[in-house]
Length: 404
Image 1 (cartoon, rainbow, N blue to C red):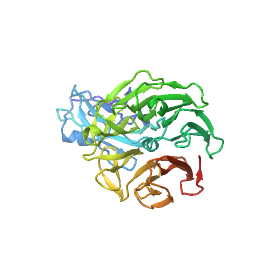
Image 2 (image 1 turned 135 degrees about the horizontal axis):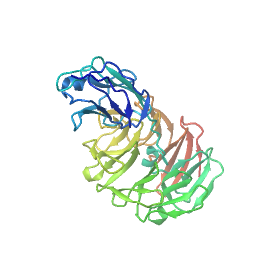
Image 3 (image 1 turned 120 degrees about the vertical axis):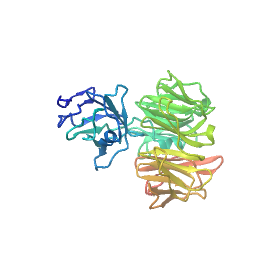
Image 4 (image 1 turned 90 degrees about the vertical axis):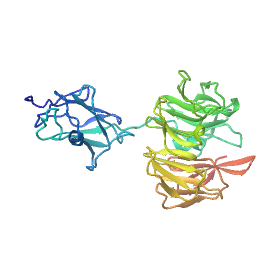
């Protein structure tokens, strides 16, 4: 018979209990990573049947059951409670319950139940630009003081300006796209040198070529690494100084979004279907069975358009719960509370994330370049194939000014 009391200690965040326990003193409110797996250790072989599985439950702060995995460890004396498929929600609180249905192979069970609260770390990524801006060519980026941008068709150089549009200063004669600003440096694809990746300090000094890969696109600078696609569409990851380059996938990709440990993209090697892969190049997962475009990850959702269907669509990060939220398509950008889009007949529109409250912000020709920073929308009005003007306006369409 089991006669030991419940052991209520955590060692390296592992929960130790024994099967005849009535009570426990847990370490409450631990703050753990979103992918945390809890390993529960017992002092006898566990009877791993439906009664045991159903007695181990994780619930969120509203009392809703969370879809976690419950598996028997290789020693038969542990149970591993795996995190949800896409991880716990950053900053959220949860409760792990070990109920009285848990029992040993001899049928001896727990008298009563034990509970433990835990919280998830705030998952704030350090990013050089937003996913939405990068998908729209990354012509504008910011730090705490300035906006950094490409003057596009006027003289097509790298500039910075105050956030009110004043005090424009040229930083380099390079033609930049996919601009990221990260820890005092500007990273970009340089059109004056085969679209190779460069960086320069925000004061215009220290200009350096980081890679000889031509036609580098969809550059994401996230948490100390650079992610991008080369001229063949292959996806790479390297350090901020250009060293340590590794190839993440042999597929041809577009629309790279790096978000919370995953990379979401359009896979040209599979008919343009949407995929995701982790930031180390593992766990490739197909999310759609049809060709997509303008893939943008924002918060806990993916927004996108389709080649064979008009409109804007939305689904969760696991590829489920697809919803059509707007009948109009065109170029899109998503930033926090709103979706911005330019349909084929022109103009810039804004709507809520659920497709409600559609309003027209500006008259302009159809475009692919809508960038959003703070409370401002930056866009290119394609007057003709040889000329375009840059504009800035408030997110409600007021105070429209020409930048160049």
